[in-house]
Amino acid sequence: MIGGIGAIQFKTAVDGAESASPNLLQGGIGTQASESGGSTFAEVLGQAATKTVNTLQGAEQMSMQALKGDADTRQVVDAVLSAQQALQTTIAIRDKVVSAYLEISRMSI
Image (cartoon, rainbow, N blue to C red; front, side, top):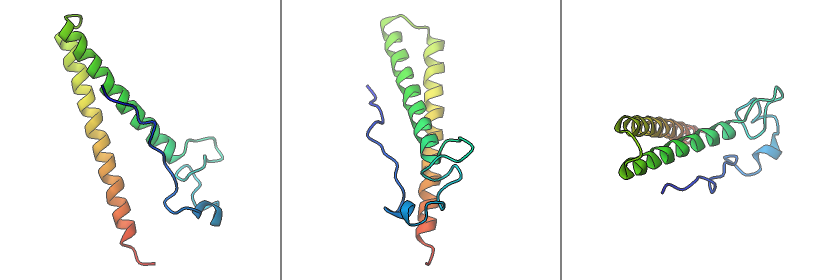
């Protein structure tokens, strides 16, 4: 079975950056929620990752039901295709985040 992502934690890129300039990372993208009550970037990524894992687990459960004869083939195909799309989306987002990180790391100070 596919495990959860409870061990993943998001933190600021540089420890202590938040205390050095507390307003630098605000606005819905940093480590604190914006004043309008929006979610932080880390929360949005966490929710997306959780949703992807739940989709993959649902497809796995549907496949198990099909092996037992309790699910229709169309339901299994729909669940597996949905899981594939969610996984491809997550991989694309990961690639963009890594690319952005590498671009930032190449910047001169």
